[in-house]
Image 1 (cartoon, rainbow, N blue to C red):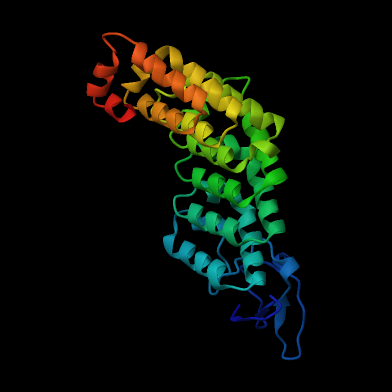
Image 2: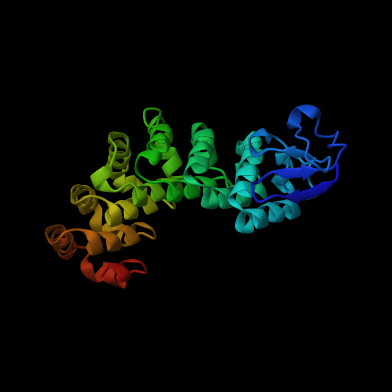
Length: 301
């Protein structure tokens, strides 16, 4: 079928012939005065809304950089109706697209530009797969975008999916994953303590309890630092309490030293003084002088 034009109402016009490759079931026929057929917005399913690409399946975006750029351009400059059409088309294979090498960028853009209902529908389809998407090199950026663009109650389903990993120990594993730690970081940033769900509270409490383990971990230390920066005074104090018994060792550790610096910046005055006092009292081989002379401890002092 020959591409005719997008109309201002979001309806696509086709010449007679109407694209056999799509199949008659893909759209509803509506005869206009000039003999053209129309596809209404609500009739669009797996039909591709990109000009000249009408027979493309959404899954083709996965590794086709050119097709992805065309989709991004339409999302950037197209009308609300065109964006809605792209959303419906991509929802037919949205999980695969989130994981795709090229298509992940399109899904992120879609989350940015979709209206509230569209974003909510997209989030509902991806939320059951949060654990898998969170540790993907590509899809973790989609999950981060979902968290950044949703607020309050809309984040609860995502939090619950992660909370379900807590009893098996998989949540701690996810928090120590190169990509997974970013998801927990974004949740800590966007779930205000005053509006925190019980599930999010238990997630944060787990990571507080594992402070000594996480602060020395290549990726887990970021979670501890985020709780120090964005968490409640009670959790900051609990982290300080976990750091104190090993404070001189941690102050000289490659990654844990950054956590000690964050504690000295964000904890209340009483906890800061306790940390300083413990550093002053510790004798050799980790006296204050030796901490100060070490590669990483020098930044703490």
